[in-house]
Length: 123
Image 1: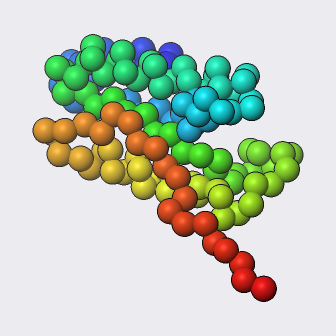
Image 2 (image 1 turned 90 degrees about the vertical axis):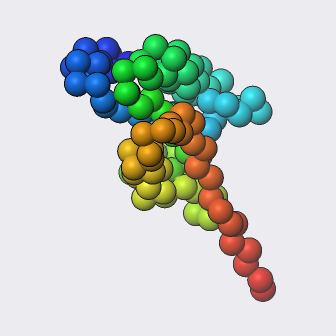
């Protein structure tokens, strides 16, 4: 949010730019058991909605990407979620690319990224 605040004047002057927040699907999942994470993650989701309304007339894209659990080294201390339930960092990067390559006539303001399939092992 602070970075967006610092860069927005230049984007507005140029008449283009993008603010893409990476949130978490847990921020919109009311069943989440991790209430503290919920509070932290829901903030960018609300921020992007307000910002979008304020700057879209200046040609600025505002979007939030909401992945599920992304298996990264940042969370290596936590017990592992089954790999087939993880989103990949490549999937998140692809969502960012999609936002940035969308036509100027549309703005994907929110993208939820979830695994497409869950592998089932047969014994």
